Image (cartoon, rainbow, N blue to C red; front, side, top):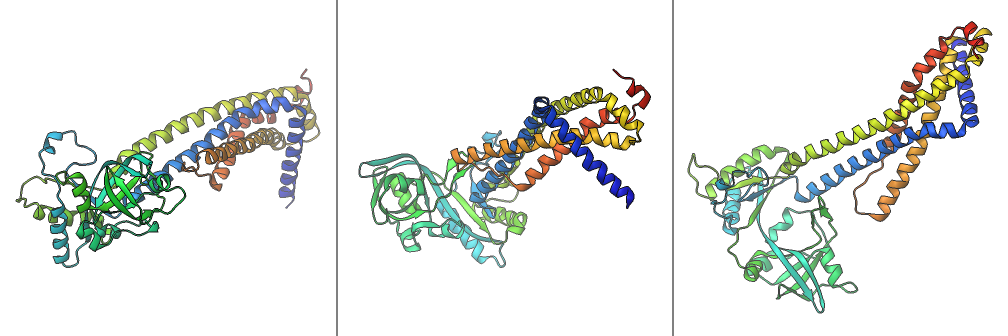
Length: 419
């Protein structure tokens, strides 16, 4: 107990001395802590950015659906040998109907439903208002089974409207907000590339996909109505929902076999379609995220290294300035451990102050980003505070240990004679 009490006294006394030294040399302490402040700001903001990227990435992939396959003519990535894909026949609406029949006839099928989807750019007009660069999407009533998007107003079109090719549509949130800023759009007739279409619903706000495409800048209609407006020659995409997302690999194999039957392919023939999924995006973007993380760690490490060198230098200066004091303390019985703790605590204290100031500055920057760009996916979590302060303490220990060790090893006779 006496040993613990002595250690406690030594630590508290070391903090008292460290605080007195910091107050006595304010400007020097501030300049010394500046490197740590920059390092902690870099650590915190980099952690916030990486988590924001992860959050935005996961949210974007969730919009694609983690239990949905996409049947298309082209693969999303890896189509360098384009000549193997260019002559493939387009995916047709009839392929979805045939595939759904196969799914229904397959006992315990891992596939739920196949939904055709066509799209192209268009403009939407109402009265004197007009919005360009809108994505027009044609699909069927079964689309409601593969998406979890709700309607802020109205509803999606039903099976009767879908099969009958009714000229009805559901507007994206941004489109409705631009054309109907002070009134409901339900029941109004908009013109999609000059074709009249009655609004029956408005999607809830969804956001962007990886900052490249906004799901709110779209208009959805029955695919038969889409074909009447824009022509039906172009191919479609099939979105196939999986019954159990824990069995994606087996479901993929079943889907490939079913699609080969739909397309009438013989054994040994190369698939004339591609099965895409969100993991393709993940595989492409993971190396980019890793590169960003390594670049951030390099910058952060460099900043902390410079800060640590500064603290080590100032601690050496402090030891030199107080050599006589060290000799006096050792002459009256101070232990090496006591001297070591005194200078080590001083270095750690400067780092903790720098870390706290860096955290405050980083959090201020975070709030500024949230205020100016509310849709930007940044996250500032409590564990970042813990990590930053831990980094501060470790930096203080590593940078202060060598000069503190040297101070503790001084010969009291030599130290007392130091001028």
